[in-house]
Image (cartoon, rainbow, N blue to C red):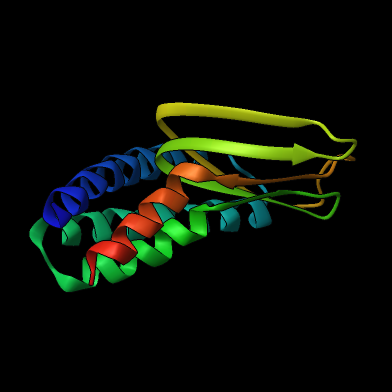
Length: 145
């Protein structure tokens, strides 16, 4: 059963990695500011890493499980503040978020990719978690035992 779980997560990671890599590569041609270009390159690197970890998972390599755990954990937090905004998902997302003033939201998309890393954000505060990434992290953690 653990091999099936790892293969399913690997498929999601490979698909999300390819899609994210091509999406950010396309955006790189339109960006003119060096900081935004550097942030796009960082995002492309993250999608490349999840793509490689997904390939390792599919091939049964032990590195795939370890790398995938860390990369899934990096997808769990979603943060929006006036100073920093962060959110990343590759392949699919199911997120629960809480905003200032008691507002909350839940959303999911399959398939989907997203990369958001901005310095200096809006006026709103938002904190959330990607539940699907957390589940994938826990499944990978349990399947390594």
